[in-house]
Length: 291
Image (cartoon, rainbow, N blue to C red; front, top):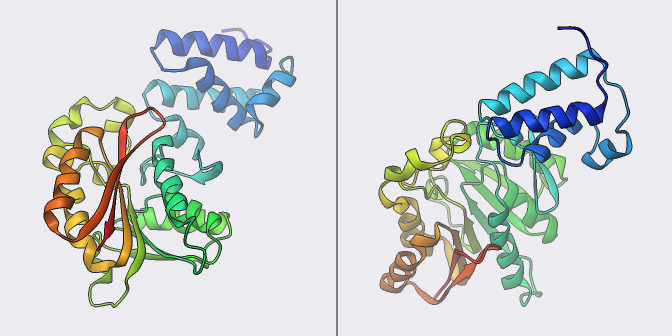
């Protein structure tokens, strides 16, 4: 094949058509995001430099990344970053990619604590993954003490990188273990416990898009039968780690919220409870207050 002098505009147009042909979602956005990453630029800047010629090294690297996307590897793992709460987080296959709907958890914590100005909260983030929730809360709640747990040592390494990247590492205590287990034997009680636990039903796992099913860590997604295993544990074990009047917030599948609210009611540990919708108007976060 004869060498062509590629400019940004032409390369984006050809790549977009190719991705569309391969049935990749949002082909233009994908092409722009990956090229901007390769050029250490921004998507907006690509439009300002449409006629810029590209060197062979950039074209070769770009083609390699596009091949990875054709194999359905998520764009975020290819570029190594994902935006959450208007912050850039380092991500990789050792953690679930932070989703926009999880921002509802952060928003609700801030809403709850808006009336509690007399002291800074102590917060536990269960299953922190990349640290997106913990870091976002630490940035918003200056002085808050946040404990962030995860069963994966690799995930915690990324969470540490992200906490340092955003200058909140002194606020966040990272602990390794299964849910509350790292706190066993300790006397810690929290104002807020927040979690985005694994909640995909095992029986539905094969239905997930290949980007999720084949690349994101199953350990952080699979909630066992009906996806409710970890949700139930958090609801039932949470009161032992919450202060009186403390709040529990859990993200889940919209189909799980009613069952979770029933569990909260039947446990006898909680008073106020409610469900909050995400930005797509799906029931997403269940909130309960410790008696």
